[in-house]
Length: 300
Length: 325
Image (cartoon, rainbow over all chains, first blue to last red; front, side):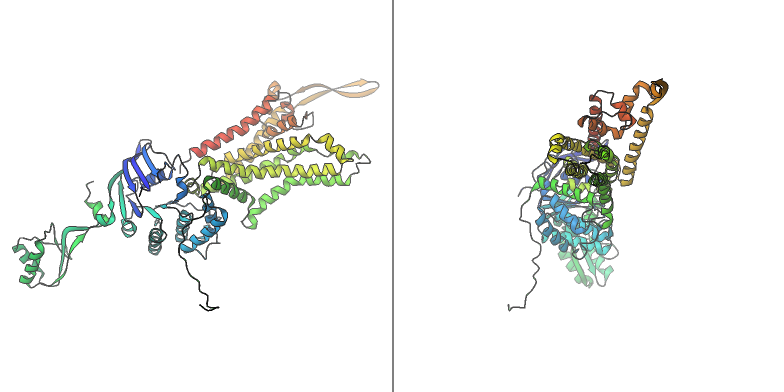
């Protein structure tokens, strides 16, 4: 399966500012998170793939084409910008019909698609109201709807949960999940919120100061570590002393006992220490990393 | 399932398998949307007031002239018919209304798209910024073209129907038809491209409209003021009668008057109109600027028209090519 997006030595300068510095990566089917702090180059990367700007050097390929030179591939992708981008005076229904046609869908089918997609994003009842009267959450849903109204193979979402309250954020993340898993549309999600990526993405690209700092499957990056977490119900001190006597150092982080660099043999020693000290173990598990930990552990 | 036990099934999300017509459909959609936006189609009543009002204003002179013609008796040789403006005069008469239409309605096409940030949504689809501009320009050009032709069609119909002999009238005046079509297209291009270029530099429609109307008034007033011809008269006795004879005519800018007259925005199309309809504006016919410009070779008014449409078109193209998204 060819990559949906391909970056090869992709570089973009704005005057003396380097927004992207020779990054290379592929984006395949599924949900890909493009993660990084503000100014990391996420929006620049998206605009390069959308053909809105030209690379200084290197290439950004969209569905095997250069989006800046060819308009063909752009008919098969969708884009949801971060900022306001909706005409206030139009109704959602009229706007979506228009955007479907601008994506190449004939008027009759555009009308049907607009109605279907508005129903799927939960704006069925509100579709004949001017967009200017919508709440922030509703506008975000119209933005997503216009991005998928022409049934693209890939949709690029730029900070889709920005400005939403917790309920709105949950709803948007659910919609993104449905877009990928029910609608079958691949998603590239640009965000600075690691939680959004952890909840929705299959793979992640981490950009920092214009360079690719990390990439891989979210499941792989957040896999089990060599750190063991132990929660004991009682006889806490005796248990730690028994472990120390067997050569296993356990630190207390206030809630759990933590054993760094645990080996396979340590499990037997922990069992023996528990028996000897009479401590009851409530929980024993390897620690899983979060994307936050990955950020924290990287050298500055 | 028995009759009367119908159920509604949610089929879920359906993939689109129909035709995709690409860039041509995208351009057409933008053109149609432009026409609807200017005319207020699909909007509330308030959005239609301005376009309908301005359309009626452009049509009114033609309707008034035709009504007057209908009440005159051509067979009796009613001299009043000679004073009814013909196709050569009509465009000059409605030019002020047309520029007001352009000033108010052209920004409607470009300003909201940039103010509301809709432009990136267009340009990530199978469209280029040139496609966008051409579709918007053609939408406005088409509306202005209909507007300028509509008045002439009404006027022509009135002139033909009230003529003594319709066939004779058509035989004698058939050349007016290509002239009307050609001149109408030139006027529509001029009225479209300038206001659109101004609208490309602001997101506020009111600013664009005010700038266009102010520029129109200012340039017209300056050029008319500087080309106004003041004559002194000498009174002489001839055959027992006292008559006035022009002794000397002067203009504030002297010999430069014909060139200063080229600054007159209303004259940009009026001067071409005079050429196309083969009219020589004499004293009292047309603005002081157009009278002054008539002393110049035809190449000058043609050059000015090309500049006043070409430079705004280039500005418009350059602005959208460089726009930061």
